[in-house]
Image 1 (cartoon, rainbow, N blue to C red):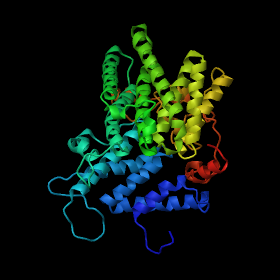
Image 2 (cartoon, one colour):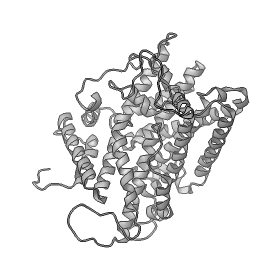
Image 3 (cartoon, rainbow, N blue to C red):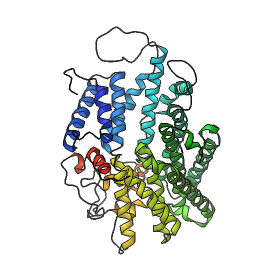
Image 4 (cartoon, rainbow, N blue to C red):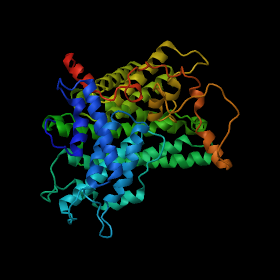
Length: 478
């Protein structure tokens, strides 16, 4: 930073992403926030005005940073740009996406260069999967674009580009299998999007349930097909480095979260047809699957994750949030908070609180769960709305819950219901519009009575957890 030379964009992105992990006393909240805002805007301008492989690489690092702060529109826009530019990473018809916007002769790409470009595509793909499943809209990355890179994916991630030999057990190798799980994540997400628009007729429901059972079978098959070196057991963590152990935890945590996320759609149905006696067995099986997934995730946290929480990425926090949300739904629908459920819930809540020292999104999960718990403890009078209503309705995505808990939400509940209007002329389109109307759950501004933020930073919440991270450690907390 003391050099007079202008650093590269990648420097800005990596330095900004590493700020939450810094112990440097000179980097207080104000200076960290100022540097991060400057670097973020510099990256945005560069990638929009001069797209290239280098600027796309930098944008990908920035998206990873942003996604640890919010699942809302502030990360959707840069992700949309990245997924659009990722298509240019294809090597077709002799045309190659330029390396940078600077002057220089166009040189043929080496084998290592091609592998790194392939890896960048799959890095963007993984971010797209991580972020999309927290929303209620489909991915902008089409299957046709993904299929172009698919034939070389295994070689891209399971071969050392400098040596051309198979790599050993490393985070890269673990991530190569994580990509297979993310393929299933896309399917689970699409099923969830279909669930939001599902009509209460038997034909639509049967078609949806067929997809549900097929994806559930694919998830189980993925776990059974994992190589033995990637199967988690109590003794394996003794032989792993911290980085590989964290990759293991991220892999297995995400798997259990997908099982819970998928089965929760049936275990806690928002559609009346699913609540009928005809589907009672399917509902009970899904509830059992959710409980097994929660128990497995709790064991994972108890035995390993709680000890390396500062080395886990925010997708692990999302995994824990999914489990904690289901426990909240179970308590709300049954009116019971069994000792085992209570133990699991506060285990999840404590880990989310701990990870919140690094990842802002984890702090938001914690606030939402604390608010829901407070409402359940006090009881919600009939006719009043609180956060527990949308949280227990799975048609509300995680990003919607986050947005509605903000002081300035993008979506507002209307205090008075006037004559409904629609921009659609088609009856089918109007029916779909009505099926996506959940405004009754938040009719006034009091429904999300979370602590209001007074910061002048982005959407009235601190963008940087860096100073909080330093205070967290200085206070002597583990």
